[in-house]
Structure formats: structure tokens, C-alpha cells
Length: 370
Image 1 (cartoon, rainbow, N blue to C red):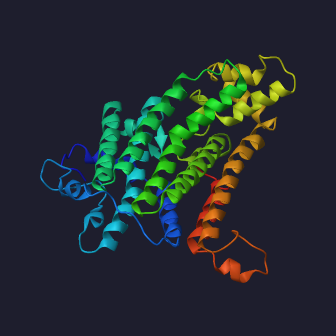
Image 2 (spheres, rainbow, N blue to C red):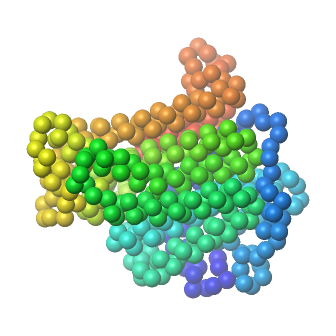
């Protein structure tokens, strides 16, 4: 809700639409896993937090965030306040993510999102952009009320990364070296998707008062999960139906976006000794903007090892995330995620939340929708 009645419908339209809620689920499970760490002393947010919490988020004189975070600012107990601060990151991550989708859909001219008309199709471009701006500002307001300068700086850097990623995507040129184009694609993927997940995980650890080692660990873990998630999401553009995706299938390719499958097809073409102007590369360079390019690109991708190679990239990020998760379980008191079948005691020592994170990692590469 908002004190501005004109804002509420557009702000809530996409935010309340059925979706995966991958980021909130990840953060909630990660929090439970990090709670298992045996940390003797935990830091607190800065002293400036009290004055920030007392300030209103709205001109009416009463704070009214889009999603209630009142528990974060309760003075009844230190535990409740700390728990609330941690849970605020769950809300903030979803607010920022939803805002970025609203903006992206305007830029890409998308027709649907989460199985319904995109926000700018339901309202108009101007309203969708302003609605996304509102969600960003509301998210930043909640971050400020957490009272941590580091959290504010990290989440501000996320907004910068989202813009940087969008600019890289819009301005990237695939007419040069293909290896360079692949690096650009991975850089864009980090900025547009993984940065939000990485910094949200790091901020969660900060608000839990964990040492810097675990803040860095959380950021690295989130970055690997985010990269794997987006790499597989790009593959689903070629393999999933529009109904499962919640948006048109082949939308990225039809929009001229460079993603891993077509890049891999062009690289394989080059490795086979094809000319610099092989079919896949030609389509890549002109961003599939000619009639028949999309259909031809699909044939080239599935006639090659492009899709398995793209999937391998995602699996490499999942493997690294799994290694990081093993570090966490080892710190908690186990030496590995699985152990042998006969090592029941070791398996039993693994917190349920760590098991859930491992399952979430595998589900990232097995899901059938975006």
C-alpha cells in the first residue's frame, strides 16, 4: 500500500503476481543455515539506526512500506529486532527484482510477465517506469531503516549494477572476438542477475552480525547461485513453453539478445574451422533481426553441442556453490554434504537448512520454467 492511491495498483500488479520467489526462498533458507554457525560475538548495526528508524517513510507522518517490516523496528527485544532486520532483506531483494523486471519489460517491449500482461501493457510505459521507480525507492527506504552503512552501500551498488548490465546488453557488439563476446555476456549476466542475489546474501550476513569471513562467503555463494540461475534461465528460452516460462518462448532470441546457446553454437562453428562468417556467427552479429533468423538459429543450436555446453557452464557455477556449501557444513561440524551411505551420524549432523540449500542448487538446473 501507499499513501498515494495512484501508485498502489501499478506497484502491486507485478509484485503480487504468482512467481517463483526464488530470491526470498534462497535468503530464508540461507538465514537458517547461517544461524547454525557457532559465532561467539555478533556485531550490531550502527548507532545511527535508531534515528533512521524513527523517521517516517511517507509524508503522512506514518511509515507505510509496501511490505510490512514492522518487526524489524520493534524495541521489545534484541532478538526480535535482529530477526526483523534480517527478514527485511528478503523483502528488499524482491522489491528491487520486481522493479527491474518492470523496467526491463518496457525496454524489451515484452508482452507478458509471470503469466499475465506485462505492467506496461496493463497500464502504460510511463506508469510502469514510475511504478518500478517507486518500488526501488521503497526498497532503499527499508534498507536505510536497517541502520547499516555497509548494507546501504552494497544495495546502492546493486542498483548501479542493474543499470550497468542493461547498458552492456544494449551496447555490446558481437562482431569481434567470440571469446570476448562470451566474457561480455557473463559480465552482463553478473550485473543484471547475480549481483542482486550476491549482495542480498552478503547483507543478510551483515545484519545477522556475522564476521567478515561469512559476509564474503555469502556474497560468493549468492554470486554462484545467481550465475547458475540466469544461465539456465537463458537456456529455458529455447526449451520451455510460453506457459511454463510465464513469458513468450524464444523471447530473448526474438528480441536480439545475445545468450549462451547461440554464442556456443558460433564458437563450435569456429572450432570446426568454419569461416569467420559462419551461419551462427552471422545471425549473432545481426542479432537475429532478419526473417527466418530465429528458426535457423534454433536448428543450428540443436544440431550442435551448444545446449550441453551452455548447461555445463551453469553446472560449473553450481559445483562452486556446492563447494562453498561444504565449507559451511564443515564449519558447522561436518566434513561434507553427503558422506558415505554408512556414515549416518555425519549425515544427521548436517542442518536441514544446508540440505535445503543443496536441494535448491540442484533444482536450479532441473526446473522446467523460468
